[in-house]
Length: 87
Image (cartoon, rainbow, N blue to C red; front, side):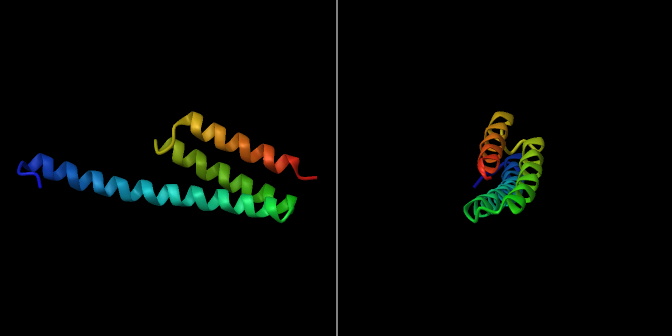
């Protein structure tokens, strides 16, 4: 454990940020799973609605600095292609 006051504060802050980041990542994963489930069920309207929500969650996570912008773009692109393949 750190002895210096500023080091103790940094530890507390990093733990708080890690919890917040974990929460946002969990939301993103859940949104992506909903899109995948709709694709597996071959339900295009549900997939499109879930895709819209997933893109929103990914964009929020990117704005907060949790995901790199290229990672977000790659995930959005792959999900969009998968939804568009449904007929």
